[in-house]
View 1 (tube, helix red, strand yellow):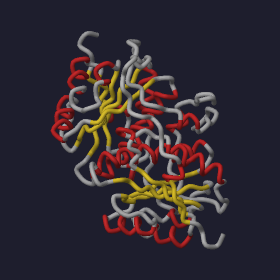
View 2 (cartoon, chains in turn orange, red; view 1 turned 90 degrees about the vertical axis):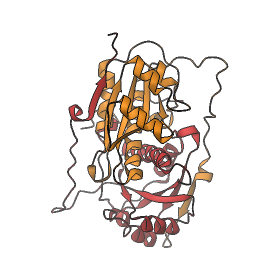
View 3 (cartoon, helix red, strand yellow; view 1 turned 180 degrees about the vertical axis):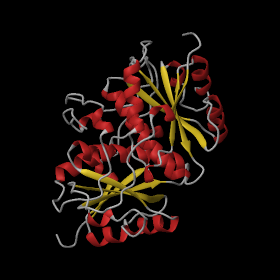
View 4 (cartoon, chains in turn brown, cyan; view 1 turned 45 degrees about the horizontal axis):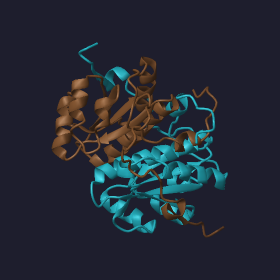
Length: 180
Length: 180
């Protein structure tokens, strides 16, 4: 099933958020591969608690862009994938699985040379509004959308969220085996 | 930063849960690459709402294995990574980001030829107990752990959760641009 050579893990550690895009459209086949990566993601009891809404409409993207404090990139990306998540039971579990699918889709974009950035819709009324705009009704809830496009340089003077990470010594503890 | 050749997207769609492992240990460098993949995952406002607990202790793994209906593989895997997630505010957002980190770590295992499987701790009291076993206190909450090891064949007669996926036609809707 995995006929291509196995990539290095650096493909997974090198992805950074891209908030600026050129006007070049995303090829249909590239988008399809992104959606396939979402589709094949694992989930608890294989329930696949997600739906993907491909938003090309500029008018809808512009409205989505107003529904989160850091969602402006949704207006300027050539295509946006809104993520509907089934939240009627175990919302946190479903959001965990949705995060897995989002990561897989973002990596599929990254591996094809496309930039991407997730946006969160909040507070809850904004997530409700995003769901309406995307044509999804409960139990489907739209808290997140992903911008995808060909990366453009970040404009000068744009303030950025620091992109560093905590060192492993701060993140990791170990519970050793007493027998070793 | 990404010096290795870019892999095909098939590396992302080919991962399946592995619940059976050989007794071969996971090499330290392989485990480190898995943790680095978790560490470099993106998160909302780069808050990195996660901690990773590497559980080698067989006694602790055996107790964790009792804390979820499908968690038995935690007892038999050579190493388990328990995921502490910061839940004091916006639990669903943090779980979404934790799902992203989990997916990145599982893919890092997969790309190195290792099998992996996530387990969920539930109900809430079991997540509390998992946190205690892992030495984490609130706001850190342990709902999930990932088994990692060299894959072994699934024993005959083992019932499996169906591994198929819904077709894209069931998962995807489109909001086209009116101007095209």
